[in-house]
Every structure is written in structure tokens, then in C-alpha cells.
Image (cartoon, helix red, strand yellow):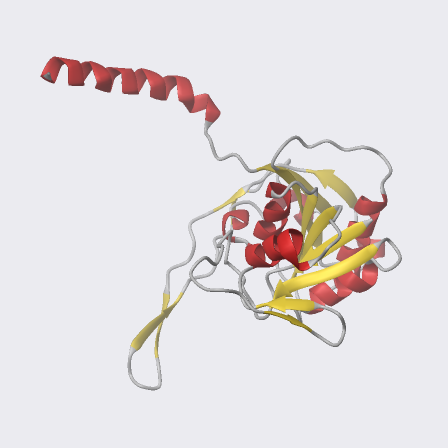
Amino acid sequence: MRILLSNDDGVHSPGLVALFEGLQGLGELEVVAPDRDHSGASNALTLNRPLTVDQHPNGYHSVDGTPTDCVHLAVNGLFGEPFDRVVSGINTHANLGDDIIYSGTVAAATEGRHLGLPAIAVSLVNDGHFHYQTAARVVRILLESTRALSLGPRSILNVNVPDLPWSELAGFRVTRLGNRERAEGAVPMTCPRGKQRYWIGAAGRGGDAGPGTDFHAVREGYVSITPVHIDMTRHESLSGLRDWVDGLNGLEDMQA
């Protein structure tokens, strides 16, 4: 099995190193990750300049681009042999609920899926203890499973692991995405040259965070595993929207 590892925290992230070490012996591993932190990059793809790829003494490759760039290049040009799957992580912080819209970690996994490969995004719900080895062990268990799993087209697994020693995990739970409350306000600051600047405010707390959600599972000490389908169509609204648009068409006929 050939596995592509990537992330959004950068090629030197301790989470990426822990993932690489934790998957040793499972198959042939290749690492292609951004040359710096690209947290919050979402699915950005660099189209306005060529990209540079460097290989490091440890064998990892870095790209001066986004997580999506990394997976796209790795699958579509850097290596002669194809990959069997993509794993993105271990992200230094949670990717729960609405976080996945912004997450470069999730974006790297979805790019792999767009290119036809099963993919997992894994994040540590960090509370300051940095139990990356726990998250790496979770990924290994998922990859070692011999049971067939079909998620359907354009789908990935979004995995969030509590920041706990392995022995303290409560288990695994299949969850749905919750959502957060409104983010905190922007934080103003003044730069050394006297110009006003702003930090983006902290993410909101869990709003929809009850039983069944990813927020609730990790709060209870469980690994949250959420199947994510990359189809943003609001299917249940199609019928009502068609009726509404038909009404607009009628108005056009009347005005004519």
C-alpha cells in the first residue's frame, strides 16, 4: 500500500512527524506538505505562479503552496507510482463542525478524494498535552481494517481525536458535524509603524454540539469519525426553489 501524507501545518509539524512514525511498516509512505503553516487555507489552489518542490534530508517533500497544491502535485506529477490513499494530518487543533469549511487539513484530504483516492483527515482536539501518538494510532487502526468500507463518491472521513493518552480514550463514535456559534470579534492592534491592524477573532463555541455531533463525542473522550460528502447542494430545497423560480419566469412573461 502506498500512502500519501500531507497537512496544513507545514512540513516540519510535529503532528506530521508523529503520523509518519506511527504508520511505519504499514506500507510505502511519501510526505508532501506545505513549506510553512497554511492553516485556514481551505481548498485554495495556486494558479497564478509555478510551484517549487524541495526534498529534505529526511525524505519529506515540501511545496511553496497550499495543502491542495501539495496533494495535487503529488498525485498528478511528482511520483511515477500511483497512491492507494491519502492521509492528511495530524492537525495541531480540532476540525469540528464548521471548521472543515476553512480547514487546509480537510482540504488536502478532499483533494485526494477528488483525484480518486480514499482519504482521511485527522486532527487532535488539542488541550495542551499534544498526544499526537494517540491520533497516529487511531489512523493506523483505521488503515489496518480489513473490512470493506464504501462512503460513496466525493466522500472522506473527518477524524477528531481527544488529546488523551491511548489508555484514556473512551472508544470510537460515528458522528455528524455540529456547528459553532458566531466567531468572536476581530482583535485590533497597532503595528510598530503606528498602523492599525486586525487579528481574526477566535472561533465560536459549539452551538449545535449535543449528542450525535462531533463536538459531543470528543468532549466525552471518544474519537469522532464523520463521513463528509463534498456536495454543497441543499437537495431538500430544490423543489421549493424550482417553484420560486417558476414564479419569476411567470413575471418575465407578464412584463414581456
